[in-house]
Image (cartoon, rainbow, N blue to C red; front, side):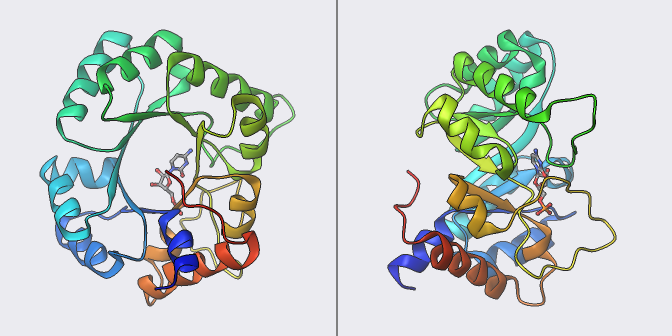
Amino acid sequence: MTNSQHTGHSRIVFALDVADVHAARHLVTLLAGHVGMFKIGLELFIKAGPAVIETVRELSGAKIFLDLKLHDIPTTVRRSMRQIAELGVDYATAHCSGGAEMLAAAVAAGGPAVSVLGVTVLTSVTPDSATDLNALVLERAALAQTAGCAGVICSAWEVAAIKRQCGKSFVSITPGIRPPGYRAGNDEDQGRVMTPARAVAQGADYLVVGRPIRDAADPAAMADAIAADIVATAGAMSPPG
Ligand code: C5P
């Protein structure tokens, strides 16, 4: 693997959206070294339980992002995030729509080890005439930053404005990534999508990619192609910290 390819790979967060630990083990083994981080979401966490985190870490040596998208009263979120911190994950999420006090509770309970990310507006939501999505995302990003979050989850369409408002070190992680030529399946639900290279060019630090890699005939080759696309179009950039 060349250095520039490595720069591309390190930005890919693979969404381990599978229903059981066997499928998870298979994909992690295939993708170790081809992506920078593994994201464990509700489906796998509910089915396999917290032990799956250690499994993924041991098999890959990669960073772990636990995407449970907490949204509850501040006390419940604080107590839940305390439990998440004990699992030793690197990133965890809470919905910005839960408000400033809830986000601050998540950040306090996450402590120094867990970087808490605020989910601004889901990438499946598309603009309608009644809502100014951009303004809402920026408002929620400001809320997350004030509460002490390390960054936000947003669509690639909002990254540049968030970076201008919150500064470059405020982490932006973008789902809704679709490689050039990707043919979506019947389960497609992403609305605000962008290609990997364009998302990085907009300033995204990490790209969440699920189905395009999971459902590829050769998942590792797809991850490599995405990494190459990032590097070729966006130029060699320093890997995110
Ligand atoms: O690439 P794909 O659409 O399959 O990836 C979707 C993943 O990104 C899912 O795990 C989903 O939970 C996550 N996600 C999202 N939009 C957000 C936050 C997370 O799609 N705003």
